[in-house]
Each structure stands twice: as C-alpha cells, then as structure tokens.
Image 1 (cartoon, rainbow, N blue to C red):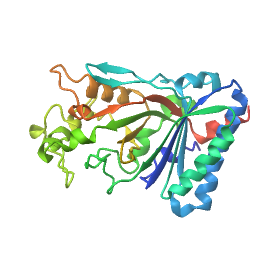
Image 2: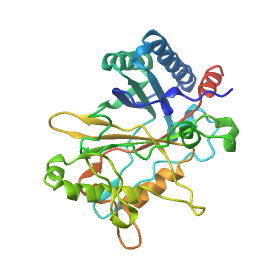
Image 3: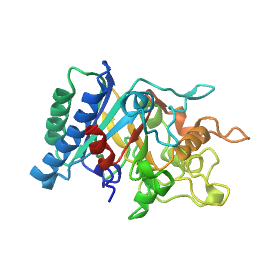
Length: 307
C-alpha cells in the first residue's frame, strides 16, 4: 500500500522548521539515497520522541526533479506560477529541496534539522531557514484564526494527495511555499471592524460573515473558489506564523493533489475579478518567496533510492 509522507496531512503542531536548499553538484544517485535517509531520520525521531508528534515533508523543486528522477515525471509538474498585478506580486525564488519539520518541541525540530543539514553536506547550500510557531490557538499574527477553511478528517487526504489519476505518484502531493511578510504597523492602525471587513470574518470568535455582508475584496471571498460544477477548489494549508520583534509574517505551505487550485487562488487574490476586486489583505502583507515542489510517496522515494 502506498504510504504518503506523514507531514502532508499532519495535525497542527506547536513548532516548525522550514528549510529551502539548493543542490550544488550533479550526483543525483547519492541525493536519491540521502533523501531516503531523511525519511529514516523523521521516523527515528517520531519513534524516539513520540510525545512530540514529529512529522516531516521532503519535497523536490520542479526544476530539480528532472535531474533527480528523470525517468518518472508527475503529470502536472509545473514551475511556480509567478503572478503580478500593480504593486501585488508573487515571485519565484530558488529552491531545489524543501524540507518541513514539525513537532511540539522546538528542540526536536532543531535536532532533526541539524542532522538533515549534516547529512546533505556538501551537496547543498541552505537558501533559507525559517522557524514557525503556533500563536494563540492557531491564529496568524494579525490576530485572525488561520486555516479555518482547511478540509477536515479524511477529506484532508482526498484534497492533499494524488490519487489514481497518476498511478506512479499516488500518495504524493503538489507543494507550494510562500513566505509572507506582514506590515504589522500598518495593519494595527486599522479599526477591528476594518480588519474584519478585509478578512471576511470576526476577529474574536472567527465567525464568517454572511455572503451578502461580505466585501468582494475580502480574503475569504478571494480564496473561496468553485469549479464549473460548483465544487470547492481546495488545498490543505500547513501554515505557521514566524518572526521576531522586528519582522513578522506567515509561512504558507499549500498541499494539494493538483497545482491548479493553488494557481487559481493566487490569481484570484492578486489579479482579482473583472471588477478589479483583489484580496485587500495584500495591502498589508507581501510574498517575499515562492516555490513549487512535489513531495512523492515514501514508497517512491525508497524505491528510487535503490536504483
């Protein structure tokens, strides 16, 4: 039975470590083996510190995939959908590997990350390291609950994981990563009622506005899309806040069985509708990174490591 990587559909944790790396040599055979070893590291720490609820994701950048696994290509593998409109941008930034490490203990995240870097040297350069944390019962630093629209229960798996439509990659997931930086000073100058209008929910108790009371530029409207059959265009988000006393933001990780919902939601937010209604929240936050990756199943990674 195909086994998906645990971190894709894992429940929220207290801490996360996000690593984006670039591969600097062409030793694909060694990298295939080392990626399988990273999975073994995750499994070891999950067993050794089971109370910490350890999980992880190893995902391969869409450009690097052709070097690493040239004989098998996911059907919808595609680069990050760079999107621009006026002063709103979704840039693409370098990244051959994306590694998400989550646990309820930051020291465990750190220990796993240190071993991952040691394992991958000297084959990689670390492009970016970001530490995420759970904030006030699942809220973004803006004060609003994040991930309310995430699919629940078993539906997470049908949304986030490739099914029988691509048999070689069943259990895999298309991963899109963006690091947003908030302008907290500008955001905090708004009245709570203005913030709520922009998000489309109440701040204190996270109640969604009725549709006839929701502004077309609200974050809720711009991210709630349907296809031609009336079905929700869903992704599973593994977002967490990050930052310190100087810089604050949200690290966004989207997992889905297809890259199309992410692309459509991004376009809806940045470009907007025919009336020019874009996601007004983008006036207060901006994406500084962007990457498209694919996280294959554990079975795939282990099998390819043998070849």
